[in-house]
Amino acid sequence: MATLGVNIDHVATIREARRTIEPDPVWAAAAAELGGADAITIHLREDRRHIQDRDLEVLKKTVQVKLNLELAMNPLMVDIACRVAPDQVTIVPENREEVTTEGGLDVVRHKKELAATIGKLQDAGIIVSLFIDPEPEQIQTAASLSVPAVELHTGAYANAAKNSLEELQLLARAATFVHQAGLILNAGHGLTYRNVTPVAELEGMEELNIGHSIVARAVFVGMAEAVREMKDLIGR
Image (cartoon, rainbow, N blue to C red; front, side, top):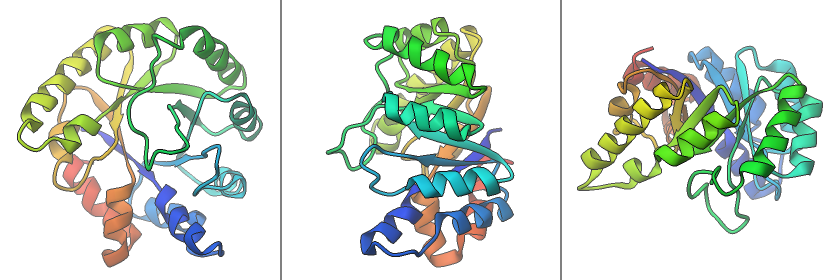
């Protein structure tokens, strides 16, 4: 079964709603670790709508598990990552108008630019993962870029109502392609306490990254307990 990366972006979203100092995502990360989080994930966006540079820098010094930094393929963001050196960078698409990430990175279209970005991050000693849609061509192209891992975008499955089984089957087929390509299989986006277990049970699933649902539950039960409940559902 999968390990759990807890995305704490929306703790910072609450803070930024009032432009104040609380709640502090650094505290959220510590509480998530107490609940059993295997990794802490943050997305440093170009518009700094939630996570700030200070958060990344302090979390780098304090997080005791893997620190996974999501960022766009932007030279300034890549420079920040190389300087701070999180354990892992997951390259994601980014649109300033979107509420949340709307789809996977088109690695086929952006292969040349990605190759340069990946090389720079890897030269800095950072593990690189690509957030992609569960499509064979995207997976094969990711493998050609010499990254060790991909994170499959689970949004279509999470948003499906009547067709969730069909979307799960697409994820299962994509998971097989990932394994055949010799890549580590991660997944995330839109996963909740109600829909996570079938994804966690996909063969070879290494890591799930979940944010909004855990932060939402933490409002009522606390971060550590919210993480423990999710860990129970995914089996670790």
